Image 1: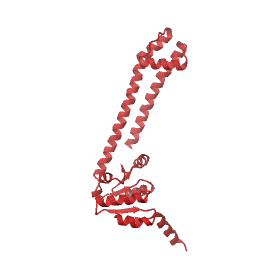
Image 2: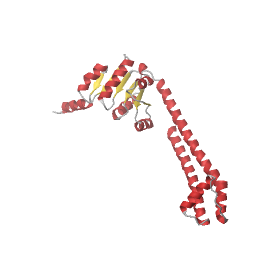
Image 3: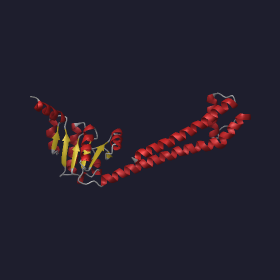
Image 4: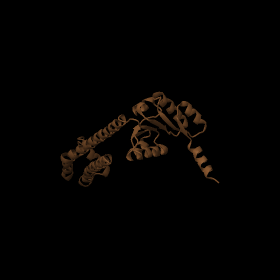
Length: 242
């Protein structure tokens, strides 16, 4: 909830800064357009040069007044807006890093938890079930869009590749209760099983296989239970047929 509020606050600040910059340029461009009989593009260039202290032309009358106002007030607001944007960027980055640190602290405290490899549709529903049953879990996912969507819904997600030993170590695989690998590719699930079994001999491993021929390979690699969704679905439907 706080992340959503922070995002709205940053958005509002950026809108205000953008409006300030637009107003400065509108004043400069149209001021020179009417007072110095310049074209709109020439007025824009002149405004930019005045704001950056690189204008050396000789202006008179109202045009000189526009130049003075830009030099006195426009420059101040222009650079304040730029520094404000820079400050917002730094603040946003700090909050993102703080958020990542908070997530890592949560993950480090996990014990007897479930590790879900893959945050797709199957991984999402598994995490939802575990969450409802008050079970400790963490999802491993490497797609940034999927990660953001899962975190918005309140799921604990670690950004990383389930195939890497370092990733599994970071989510406390040695103190985990079980690992559930539901990556889209059966071949990758086999590799996850091999790595996970090597890191934790007592770990219960559940796997998803798209092909029946991979079931034996997964069990041989160290999986305790292997589910083939398509086969299970076909069997269930045929059992209902009379």
